[in-house]
Length: 207
Image (cartoon, rainbow, N blue to C red):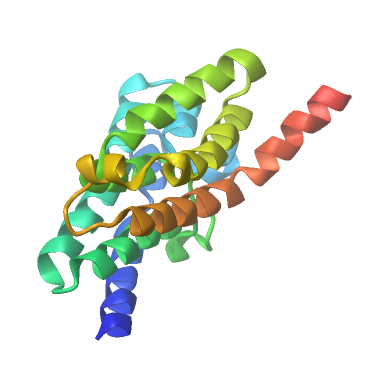
């Protein structure tokens, strides 16, 4: 039962996450293949940059956010073992966003979708991540390096914070251990999509 619910929830959430929002919106509004312009990233920031339209970036980001929210809500209502299903949904939605089968596994970087899943399970970590991100950006002056720092730091912070504190800001069926595991998996998937821009950042620094 445990394995069946995990796999099914993972599959459903992957399909939801794999909806290529930025690709579809940019293609519809500007007749551009977002994968071939700008950074090539299928996400809100690149959608804004290649179209020059703020509303496009906002719409893409919000829909990507709701992919994470929707995946977790569906898992929590459909499956009996909520904790197992939600863990899979958090991971699956981000995996689908970053590696969508429809675009030959070339997707976005997963930050908005990951944030959406956390807003449902333990919302306090989203503003904390933003603090880490903007704090890092003031030092690095680079969005990708700042994202990586915040992504690496977040699971460590969850691990260091006492369990009783985490339980106060987390849905009842989700243990601190599950939150740490889910957060680590989300961070790992997002980090895998930041490796190339991070390499470019260091190449420029060392040039």
